[in-house]
Length: 595
Image (tube, rainbow, N blue to C red; front, side, top):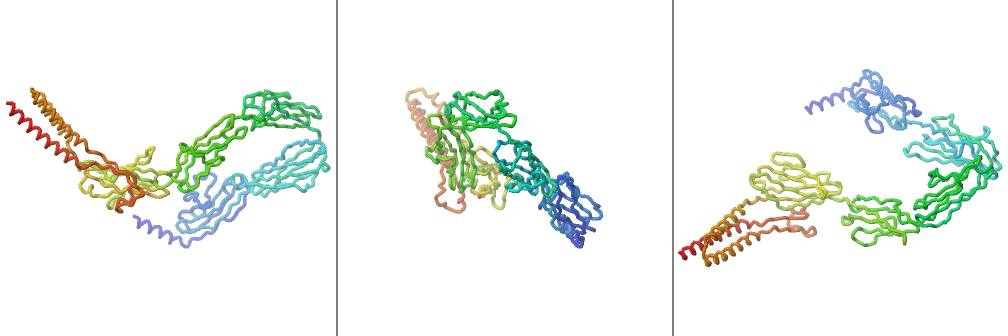
C-alpha cells in the first residue's frame, strides 16, 4: 500500500513537471476595507493548490473555511486558483504564495501591503480654547492608528503655520502608528476668535482629515486650594477650602478625588474623614466661569501603615537561573522593607527587589516580604519559589512478587516541570504506557510527584532474573533507576503460632498440680523466647549515599531507598517447630513420672 502511494506521488510529480504559472501574485498596496484579488493560474495542473500566508497554509485546495473573508475563485478546470479577500484588514498585511503541491512549484512571494487611514484628528482642549490674556498658546493634535503614520500640518486662514514639533509612536499591534504634533504660538501671534486647523493625512487618505479649534482669550478663574491640617493620622477630619478670583464671576465649583467626581459636594468647602488613599489620590477643586475652568489639586499628608503597591508573584525558574521578586509597599512616613526566607530568620534584602543568583534546589521554598512603618503598622506577603530541574527517581532496589501471581514494581518520580516521558525497559522491551503481552504500565499523578507502575501477570521464573529500568525525562534532563524482582516466600507463620498456643492452652487445663504449673511457667518462658526470636525479623531501610561511588555500573542510577526483608524467616520458623516438638516430649515425660 505504501509503495503504491509513493509511486502515485512520483507519477504525479513527473506528470506535472512541465506545468508552469501563467499568472502569479504580485506585490499590491490596498487601503483597509477594500477588496483585493491575488492571481494564480497553472494551466494543465489539476493537483492540490495551497495558498500560503507568511509561511502558513490557509487550507487545502479551495477549502478556506477557517478564513471567512478569503475565497479561492476562478475556473478550477483551467487551473485558476485566484485568492479573493473581501474587506481587507490590517491582519492581511503579509506575504502570500501560491503553491502547486504535486508539481513542487511555488509562485513568487507577493507582499500585500495594507494602508490604514488615521482616526479623526483630535486637538486637545477643543473645539474652543480659552486662555488668559498675555499667555502663549500651545496646541496639541494627535492622529492615531494610521499605517503609515499620518503627517500633520497646522493651518490658519488658509496658510500653513511652521514651527510645530512632530513625533510618532507604534501602537500595541506593532503595525499602526499614532502621530502627535504640538504648535506653539506667542501671545503676539494670536487673536481671539481665530480658527486654527489640524490636518492629518497619509497614503490611505491623501486628502486628509481635519479638526479645528477657536481661540478665546479671556480671564479664567484663579484658584487656591488650602488643606487644614496638612499632616494627619488616617481617620482624622480634614477641611479643604477652595478660594477663587474670576472674571467673569464663578458659576460652578466641582470637587473630585483621584479623578472621580464627588457629587455630594457643590460649594467652595469640602470636609471629610481621610484614609490612606488621600495620600496618593489628590483632591481637586475645579472652578468654572463662562470662559472655562481652572482645576487645582492637593494631596494630604496622611500617616498610614503599609499598603501593597506591587504584589510579588510566586516564581518557577530553571536550576542555575536568577530569581527576582518585586515587592512594593506604600506607607507614610517612609517604611522599611525586609525580605526573608520562611523559617530562616536571615535578612536577604531591604529593597523592593529580591534577587537570588544561580538558584539551587535548596533555594526553593517560601519567601516573605515584610514592610514596617514605624509607630504606625506592619504588613507582609508570602510567595513561593519553585526551581525547575531534571527528574529525581526514588525506588526500592529490590521488589517482591509471588511466582504464578500478578506482580508489580514501582518507581516514584519527583520532577519540576513534570516529566515529559516515563519509560520502562527490560531485555529487548521498552514500554511507556498501556499493555504489551503480560506487561502493563500505568502512571498516576500525586501531590508529591508521579508514580509509574509496571504490572506483570502470571509471574514466571525468568521475571526474577530480569533487570528492570525505570527512566524519566523532562526538558532539563533525565534520571534512571534499576530495579530487580525477587521471589516472595509464602510461609504460614500465623498457623504455626496458632498451633503452638493452642497446644499450651490444652496442657494447662490438664495440669492439676503445682509442679505441672511450674513446669508450664517454665515452658511458657521458653515459648516467649521462641516468639521473641520470630519477632526479631526486621525491615531494614538503607539510605543510599548519592555522593559515594557506586559498586557497579548496573546500579549507578539508584537515588534514595532500598528496603529489604531478611530471608531468615524460614530458619526462625523451623527453630520454632523444633522447640515445640521438644516441649511436647518434656510434657510427656513429666506426665509419665507423675503417673
